[in-house]
Image (tube, rainbow, N blue to C red; front, side, top):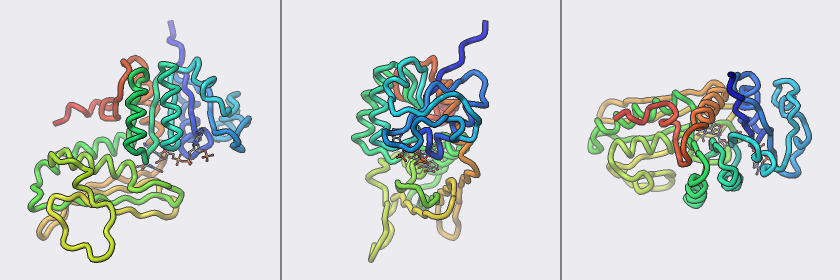
Length: 275
Ligand SMILES: NC(=O)C1=CN([C@@H]2O[C@H](COP(=O)(O)OP(=O)(O)OC[C@H]3O[C@@H](n4cnc5c(N)ncnc54)[C@H](OP(=O)(O)O)[C@@H]3O)[C@@H](O)[C@H]2O)C=CC1
Ligand SMILES: O=C(O)C1=N[C@H](C(=O)O)C[C@H](O)C1
C-alpha cells in the first residue's frame, strides 16, 4: 500500500525561495504542493503557482488565505519575513502541522511566539537549511573549542545579493553561535556587529561580524580564526538556492512523524550528537 503523498503549503510562493521550493516539490516523489500563499494585494494572487515558478501548470492557484490553505495540509514551508512567520506559526499550531521556517532576521519577540506555537506544531527552524552550512557549523564549534581566545580572534564575514533586507545573515549568526558554543560563551554579549570610528583595540574573546551586499550573490560565508602570524579560514559558498530548498523539503518530511516542539537542521541531518 503506497503512502499518501505529504501535502505541503508554500508561503511566500512568489518569492525567490518560494519559487525554488515549488519547483523542487513538483519534481519530488512522496510530496505534493497542497497550496501556495502570498499576501493580500499581491500581483501573484490567482496565478498558477507552478507556472509562476517555471515548473509548468500545477493546478494550484496562489491564494491569500493561509487558514484555508493550512486546513488539510501536513506542513508549511516558510521563507517570508519575521512578522509573517509569526502569523503562520500561530496558524500551523492551530492546525497541528509541520512548520519549516527558513525566514531570518527574527528578534527575541518573534522567537518567543514561535516557541509558543511549537507547543502544538512541529517546528524546524534554521538560518540555513543546507547540509554544507550545518556541517560547517559543527567544524567551527570544534575549532573554536580547540583555539584559545587569548591567541585566536574569531571574525565572521558574509556576502549576499543586493535584495537582502536583514544583516548579519541568519547563516552568519548560526556560525557565530557555533563559535560561541565552542568557546562556552554567550554570543550576544560577545558579538561586535558594527565597527565605525575610533573603536579602540579588539576585545579578547569577542566575535566580530562583517556584512557585504551586492549583485546576485546567493550566499558566501567565511569564519576566520586569526592568530599570531596565521589565519585559519572555514568557508561555505552557495551556488544555487536549490540547496536550501532541498534542506527545507528534507526537514518537512523528517518532521512529519515527530512530536510537537522546536527542532533545527542539526536534528534533521543527524549532526546533533557530534561533540
Ligand atoms: N534558512 C535558509 O536556508 C534560507 C533563508 N532565506 C530567508 O528567507 C527569507 C525570504 O528570502 P527570499 O525568498 O530571498 O525573499 P523574497 O522577498 O524573494 O520572498 C519572500 C516572499 O514572501 C512573501 N511574503 C511576505 N510576507 C507574506 C505574508 N504575510 N503572506 C504571504 N506571503 C508573504 C513576499 O511577498 P511580498 O514581496 O509581497 O512581501 C515574497 O514574495 C529571508 O528571510 C531570507 O533570509 C533565504 C534563503 C535560504
Ligand atoms: O537572503 C538570502 O538569500 C539568504 N538568507 C539566509 C541567511 O540570512 O543566511 C540563507 C542564505 O545565505 C541565503
